[in-house]
Amino acid sequence: MPPKTHNLRYLAQLSGAEIPQEIFDFLSMLSDISIPTRYPEDFGKLVEAYDQNVARKYADKSKEVFEWIRRSLEP
Image (cartoon, rainbow, N blue to C red; front, side, top):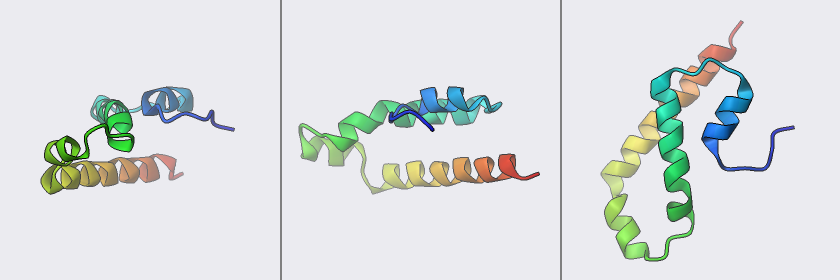
């Protein structure tokens, strides 16, 4: 049973998988932005910092990570 956490670095390390550095760095970046994006103090500043282009880049990179996970789980 995985622990109750949003820390992707911690979860990645617990998995024991050999994670490419690029993917681990991205997971670290997502972990770092998770709290300010989940609980913004100033929504206007948040929208400026994470506009549609930035959000698209995060979504595209997240898809790449999911694809890597799928490939890694294949026999």
